[in-house]
Length: 147
Image (cartoon, rainbow, N blue to C red; front, side, top):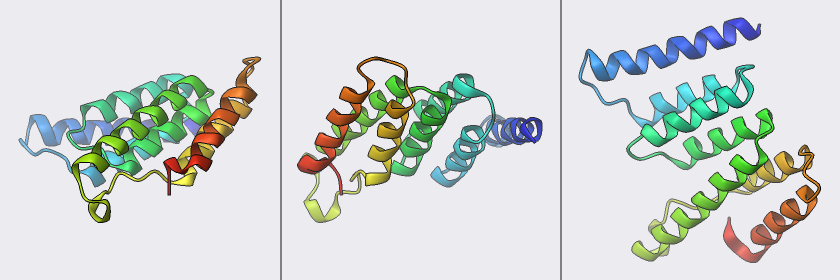
């Protein structure tokens, strides 16, 4: 049920807090990604999606899985603009990473799934220009911004 999903997400959040505050342990990416996934699957809409983003922003080194989970949360909450903003931020980070690493070691490549999630978010959006925004994202994908 929706209520149990929210409760599980809250418990996962509390566990992360206990790890940090009481045990002095910094949770790893897997721990954070589990909490992000729990919140992204709740029925909390934009509130849950924003909470996911606040968790993402608190992470030292969020992974592509972290970013895409938050984008997915916004997509399902009707937050196309927010999802698109995170995609742009991911693209910028990937470009910066590629400049600082050799191409065979670059780990910040974006997947087609991330682009698809943002296009899907725009397809569900009432903005009169939503189709233009979705098409612009498709063009970025086609231009080689991802793998």
